View 1 (tube, rainbow, N blue to C red):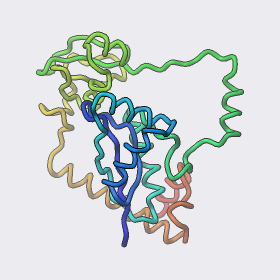
View 2 (view 1 turned 90 degrees about the horizontal axis):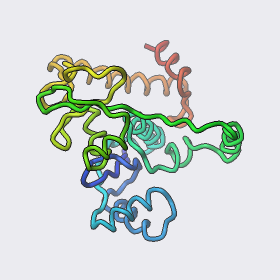
View 3 (view 1 turned 90 degrees about the vertical axis):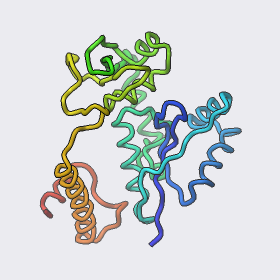
View 4 (view 1 turned 60 degrees about the vertical axis):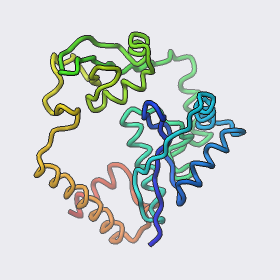
Length: 241
C-alpha cells in the first residue's frame, strides 16, 4: 500500500509551524518550495524569501504518514489542528486542494456582511514565569511580549503552549486570571505529566478511534473524502460504537 507524508515547514530558529502540506518525496518537495519562492506571489513564498534574505531555509518535519487514498482528509485534519494550536499558517486554504477553502461567492458574501462594521481584534494573553515556576507578569498579546523581551513573539508563543522555557523564562497561555505558579499538570520539563498507564490508555483510545472511523466508512460504503463531517460524523461514530 502506497503512503503519503503530511509534513510541516517550520521556522529554523523559533520552530514555529508556518505551513502544512503533503508529498511523496520529502527532499524533492522542500527543494520545490525553496525554488518556487523566487517567483511565486503568495504568503508562503514571501515567508520563505524573507528567510533566504537572512541566510536561512525552512525546516521540514513529518507530522504523519497516511494511506495515499486518505491524504486529503488527513491534510485537512492537520491544517485545522495546527491552526487550533495557535500557529499562523501560510496555507492558502484548508487543504485537500481547496476542499477546505472558501469559494469566490462565499468571500463576496462575507465581505458584504462585514462592510461598515468595525474590525474585531482578538489578542491572546500570556503569563511570564521564572524557570522555577513563580509568576512574574502578564502580557496582553504577542506584540507587547515581543517589545518587552526584544525577540520574536512566536518564540515565546510556541513555548507557552507547553509551559516551556524561552528567552530564559517559562510562558503560559492564559484563558483567565494568571495562576501564581505553573499549573500542576505540567512537570519540570514543561510536558504534560502523565503516568505510563495514562499514556497507554490514550494511545488505545486514539487507535480505537481510527478503527471505528474505518469500520464506519466501510459500513456506509463511502470513500474517505465523501464521509460526513462535523456533528453528523460524530453522531454516526457514537451510534456505531
